[in-house]
Image (cartoon, each protein chain N blue to C red):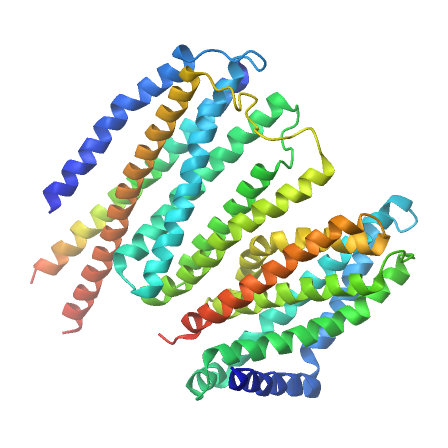
Amino acid sequence: MKLKSQIIDWTLFYILVAAVPVMMYFIFIWSPVERVLGPAQKIFYFHVGCAWVAFLAFFVVGVYSVFNLIKPKMNHFIYAGVSAEIGVLFTTVTLLTGMVWGRISWNVWWSWEPRLVTTLILWFIYVAYLFIRKMDGRWEKIARLSGVFGIIGCLNVPIVFMATRWWNSKLHPVVFGEGKNETGGGLEPEMLFTLIFSVVTITILYLFLMRKGAEIEKMRTRVKQAKNKLLQKWAN
Amino acid sequence: MMELIRDGFVIAGKDLRKEWKTKETISVMLIFSALVVLVFSFAFDPANQTVKTVIPGLVWLITIFSALLGLNRSFASELENGCLNGLRAAPIDPASIYIGKVIANFVLVLFVQMVSIPVLFILFDYRFAGSLLWFLATVFLGTYGLIIIGTFLAALAVNAQNSEMLLPVLLLPLLSPLMIGAVQASAAFAGGENMESAMSWIQLMAGYDLLFTAVCLLLFEYILEDS
Amino acid sequence: MNFLFFACTVTWLLIAAYVVVLGKRQKQLQAEIKQLEEWNSEQ
């Protein structure tokens, strides 16, 4: 059992070691330069990959939250928490790269673009979720409370996106139309391949971080158990 | 179903009677909302004409801030003498506790709004130009959504040591779509412009309210469960 | 072009920082487990 999970860990690690340089090569050298925006367009590959993982992580939090409410389990609780933590990381990266992107194409750091605003609110919901998990108390209780919040937060995301979209379309009817990547629609095959490759690589990175994080959280429960045992021994 | 609502009214009656006797929460909420208006007048020069367009938005800032005070108290006050455990042990559906708390908070916040919105409009000399009925409907829908989510999260946050600090952090991001809609719709109805687009905002708010009423009623028992 | 490098650096720096934090946590917990198990086994 332990050996098997170690093998998975190492496989993921070696895939990453191989894939990340290849991804960088694809992004910086192999993929064609965009005509309008120039080389800066290549931010897009990081940006989309991280955004995808951020939303995936949030979805995972929602799914494990539902599991937790149906039947509380330590593993579900741990996975939801680790996923939220990684989600915060990737949402931050998405926001930062999105800001750089906005600076290049619209000449403002923050453009209240619907997707950007949705991601920002998503970030706040994630952080609030992590605050709930910081509460003290028995883990079953925290699992229940954070699970409830996770479900509500997940439901909220599509509504936020709709609201920000309507809100913005009234203010700026034409400037930010469909497709924030100006390549939208006519994506060249090399670009598409690079995009898919980087999305897959970053997803593998997510899986790897997820396993590592879960392992650490499990160690934390082991520490707690050992402490309790020690206290009992000393009490006797 | 009827029983659920009847029990809810009993709990709301208990809360409101207690509030009527002591007036401790409502007085603070009223004074606080007046102070917020005062601070706004420092921040936005009332003589400036462009400020007029943001006044309907300020209604929501006042509402959120004063509601946060009331929401913080609504479950924290039950912690004294283990009243919350008494409610848990009572032979009623947990959802009716939630309904009761929602009604009580809703009445409190509506009362504060009844005072603070006219005060805001008078102090900033705002000339109402749109449809009063639709404006009130917007205020009603927005406040209802705020209370539905706020009461739910107040019950969640009361489990933490720092519940007063935790509640705004939990509440505000979840509230953002409702508040975008509420600010847009109330600005349109108060100013009498863009009434058609405001109708779609009303629909969004109504949808939000319905969705979260159902979800919160379903999930409330998980929050209240003792452990 | 500068912006591209900036964005790229930010991305990898943040991810690297997270990995470092994870590694630190793991090391600390490992030390703690070792210590606790030592205390547990001695009579």
